[in-house]
Length: 297
Image (cartoon, rainbow, N blue to C red):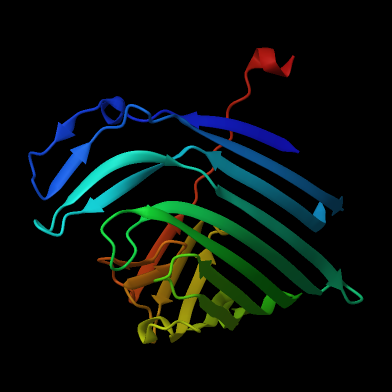
């Protein structure tokens, strides 16, 4: 069991009653009544081991923040600008839990299965402008998230074949009159394998389907099939490895990431190569240190 206490002091400039109107459309004000925020974090973990292999792992945690720092905004209908001021808000807390199980079965323990269940509940409070109003008000959003993941695999003589299924459920509710409640699902399922080939080659591949359903925005309800593959060959007792990777060979991975959290939706655009092929040459060099004569004695 662990407990941690942390505090966060507001910036000194924010605690001075000054008005910065250099930008008339974004006027910044200070707040002398601003207080430091205090966070409490409590966690409990229990697990068992058998032959250095965990059989189950259970954890639960709770965290809360008193006097959290937020920004109050007032909209000016005449100029179209905002006046902002730092304030303290209360009511931010969350609870998280996790339970994982791991078992091997069969005569020679070649089969293994795993189960991981987790849940979280976030009570998020912030300042927000309700549609049609000019003054900020407290916005309380509650987010319940449940997740279940199952895995099954088989290993024998260098062969390894496995399957995985994951399902998550999100329920977002808000007390603002302009907030639309969301009940959404995100899931994934797929296969992965490691197969020995002739001439000491090894093939590793995985197929995974990622999907989301239940969002009002159609661009969030997607199905993406991702296929990755690697072929490798080791020589000189494994000291040199040649490998060739194929990542996202079906070109379904997007550089746009959309996340729905307690206060809104975030879209991130990343400049990456989502699909590529790459070759590797890996060299491992190990040298034991020399033993001195006095160390031998």
